Length: 484
Ligand code: CLF
Ligand code: SF4
Figure 1 (cartoon, rainbow, N blue to C red):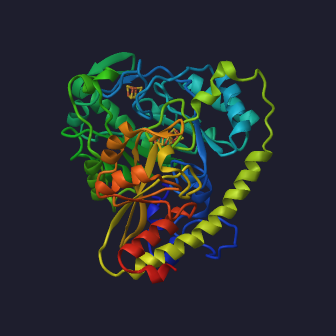
Figure 2: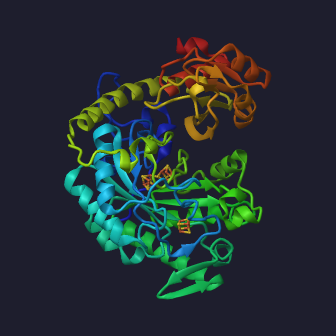
Figure 3: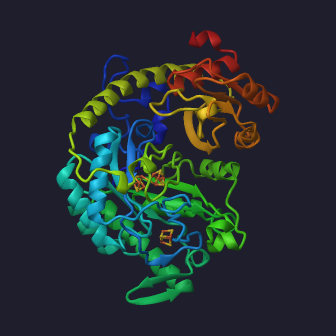
């Protein structure tokens, strides 16, 4: 049976429909949204990529045990890293399965938020299946409650679906950039398949057919499949709605459209030939166009193949293998306690969100507002403006309050002092934003942003994000009394 398409709109429908279960702030539960069955919710509720809500609370860890790949993408230079699931940047270290287990145990002991172990390269997790399988099997013996996730280009996928299902790997990402081989041939110069290197239309035809076959086989086994698509202006941007329809028809759970990252310094074909990536506005316009099809993931951070931590952070440098003790005792108590905390926090946040959405509902017209939030997790406004390395962007409007993306910046505050040189790029990165919410902000950046037409305020510090966005929206459109 195919899994249902998840509705992230469950967070943006009418308040009563947005949450299943109780709406009391004291209920201490995290009941599934009304349109997600209990079994599916159990699989996604602590997966930071498959549940937008979970990404506020839970962390993923990637282990770079799969360096080899069986295809070439024009946006990838593996000396530099895998663009499939990673932003360009070398993997700090490649690991053997044994080393990976040691590292996972050390991270699980130190990071109670850890819920998912992913293998996302730096090559292809299924082409390097021996390493991928050995890693998952060994980790399962030590940490039975961690979820497994893998990412693949799909070429080898049809051959591994049974083993994936047998190993209880519940989440698989396939990168599908085209369903038309003519478009695919502009993205993939070659594949290695059935002992032969193949090029051009033949290569793209085989790859695209194998991707669809793998997707169909996975969904038939009840495995949740997310599709990643790299948006490449002039090549597949107008084609991605067709990709969205095709993957939806085959039971894909989520569709994640990511911007091409293209820089000559990365040494990729696209980088060297001047192929540009989309602007944030182009990406948003495409994502808006895709609404109503396969549900969209909008909180991807294009993370490295060795990333560790919440999606908006990378703690990889804290866990370099050489610096870890040879043996680490793993005690699940801290992770258990953290999950109990999150369950209670979600109950409170759900009630606060319902209140905030009622404020939005009270404004009858079509007014929309883009709000950027500085947060370090927990779905709260809890980061100083000067410390933020990214801002989460929320759209408030008739459809509710929706996370629509993020904007990366360099931190303004370095060693206790404001770094004026970063303000210009930060203001540029916040183009189109109406209000910035943060836990604290100094006069200098506040005035500079105001001069650029952006309001920044710490008046809602430590509120839940939706509460703060709801208040700003209601205040802006004359409904302050409704949120008192
Ligand atoms: Fe890793 Fe990918 Fe699993 Fe997540 S990442 S293998 S599904 S655990 Fe997540 Fe990172 Fe985006 Fe990938 S934010 S690049 S979607
Ligand atoms: Fe690079 Fe990943 Fe494409 Fe392989 S599948 S070429 S590792 S981006």
